[in-house]
Image (cartoon, rainbow over all chains, first blue to last red; front, side):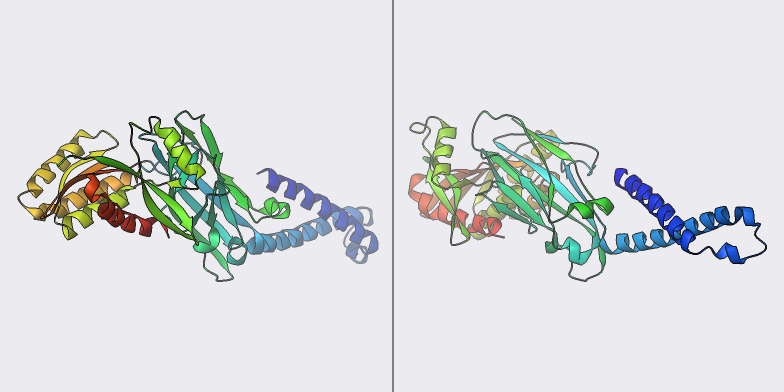
Amino acid sequence: MKNSLIINVIQTVLSAIFGILILNQFNIFDYLNFVPSEIKYEVGMTVYFAIIDSILTYILEDIKRKYSYRIECTFYCKKNEPNLSENPIVNFQEDVTEIAIKVSVEGDSSQLREMSIVFNFPDWLTVQSSSEVIEISESTHSCVLRLNKFIPDSKKKESGSVYSNLVFIKDTQDIAAYSFEGQLNGNSKADNMISSFLSNRVEIKS
Amino acid sequence: MSVKAIFKAFSKKNNGIKNIEFLPYDPAVDRDYYSFVRNKRKLNYSQVIITSEMMISLIDYYFIERSASITSIELMEEDEEIEVDITRILSKMTNDRAYYSRLIELLRFVQDKSSIDVKKITIKNTEQDKQFQLYIQVNGLVGVDEEFYQNETSEIGCRLESYINL
């Protein structure tokens, strides 16, 4: 929402600047006699602004179509439906607990396949997953969900979802509550202007 | 046929492959369970969670391949209806092994709701020369008669390794 507002403002300012620059060089309405001379500049300004704004909108849409992506990482309790606006809380029972994850993506496959979602954990927690899309790194206390594990190498726009889960066992009796969310790896700040990555948070309690 | 020894499943990575090892846990010696776990973690062992899927696979092995009896199944969440169903099916299975498919169907239903809902299973092996009782818990604890531990933990470990090496 914030990004699209910024883009709209920049687009409007650029349309006005280019419109004035071109209009100062060449105003087609100077050659049209039916346009009263006292409003030729205003008419030129209105028409040039509209044309340049349309061109910029087309270019931007093309860039968005080719390079934008939308990724949603939703943690949820297996008994409930995934809901990105809810932050689930899970409790240990017999030292173990679990959380389900739904990852939905939409975007250019070449770009998506370069990305991964990382989950970091404290050292008092051992993580296990039966999902083929998740790699667990015990040395860095993290898990990586690589999008190339389920997005085909089609070189075109793809969309899809993958469901997986993480099970945890605590290594110590008294633990502080710990919360985490998905973190996207492999994107740049420029991508963020036209793309979005959203993740809810999960809280693990004793 | 009493359970004499307790072991805990740990995994350790060797050449990129996780191997399961069952390390002895004696509550009389290792008074603090979590100190025991942390000491093993320092030796690069990781705890193993025996998920419901793994439990079903172990039930399958003992019931089908070893003709053992499943004496009890405890669930994590208290659900009286399912617990009654499980007890009823287990009791019918002692006379009619065909009820096994009903048990698996029920456990699959439980597994759909939670991957760790099977808390503990107890198995009674009645093979000649190999009569023992065994329990397996979601937190990786396995209790078995000491003289059979080597063979049984090796069989269990073998089956669990396929789930932790994807």
